[in-house]
Image (cartoon, rainbow, N blue to C red; front, side):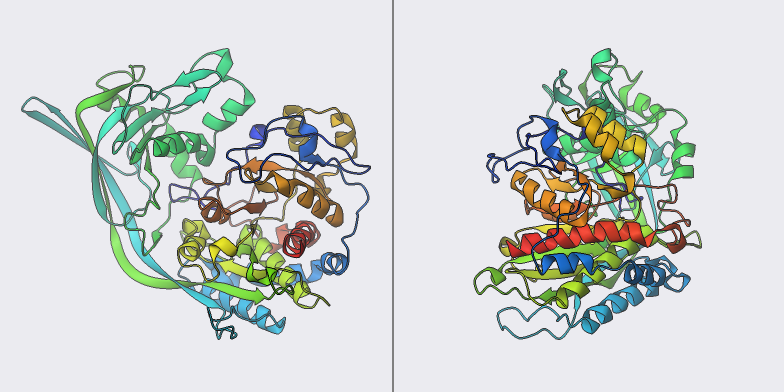
Length: 565
């Protein structure tokens, strides 16, 4: 998974932010079909949280051949795929590496052995000749940068420069220079409850916004949901909501004020990339988002001419310039795509897409990061799902595209390229299903906290009967509440209890983000973070293939249901 600032990133997985929805019950599971319009805006109306929990004690098989497909997903096959993909020979499958190229060849040959065809040539009805979609890239080696602050008072101009790593951290970007005036927006928060709008009266379009970390003082701001949204200790969550707000208001960049002593802590925790990769059509490397530069309190005080407690204001005569450097060259990578044609003469023109990213971090400072969970687990699951579906005695009504993405760790490059150059009409894509890091289960305390934050009448029963290794939390497009009963059916078929995490996905941490931004419905399957996340300790030996099998079976059931309905 990838971070918006070019370092490694977690997805939108805040435990406290999961909202409650509609109520219903069944003998072994709580589910409901919502009357809310699936094409409406925003999230389903908040009601009783019961509707978002599914308790499964006894599996309920799908109608054939769905049940056979789910049962045929084998732990032994998953373990073999993971062992190879996370082996030392593939050197962590970093973007641009021979290891990633070998992984692409491996999954393509797996598709061929399973009898899965390449995607037909558009408009011809003829089988394609290649499983590969070329993804052109811009590679920037030895990325560096400087933040320059210019303050003009009358005829006097003062300039200060800060190299990345000293009072500021600049993400890897293509070589460029960008300047803009600066607006201080306090904490950068807009909330209805507690009511606050730090942007009231400020025009930030085309400007850089300076925002403080964390939350305003006061008990009203200490709720778990607000702390999770605005004051997370993890960078992906820490400024995500504030960057989203700044983007919606037209800002081109965000200077995020961190706390004192932050530089050493961040550099110790985060792995700064030695190379940066960007889509060839992404001129400034931003993918349309504001750049995010973290700055020290000293930089903020320089910009404000005093303490950071000052009022929200445009900073007159102040401009910042971000200069990024590096050695740039053009290169290519590849997505791998297989095709299973649907059985219904009319519905087969629609294709459910199911995807998983092949790449990982490669070598970081010479040390291989194997990426067994991230994301050999998802790749193994997708390859096994494709294999068992290809061998099934019947096909679902809709077609299925199986896509192994490149470049997810570097900003969802492969999926971003695909949605801009689709090989199947996006308007004929009813849902995208994503598999990423499915190898580790939730902890008991996490499930207890989840239920505590989303209480419902049967909470005690749910906690007394749910098993940590038989629990999953699918992420679901917030504008498709009609997916709720379909996922509940998939959970029962896989023997898993569920909680639905509704999200708009636009700032998500995996490839589903690219589909969410085009308002294509999506479902995200993810297990849990673990101590070896984005570390050399993420090895095949640290994974239990039986745990991967559980989420793989849940995904297989989901894909079958979505394609067959």
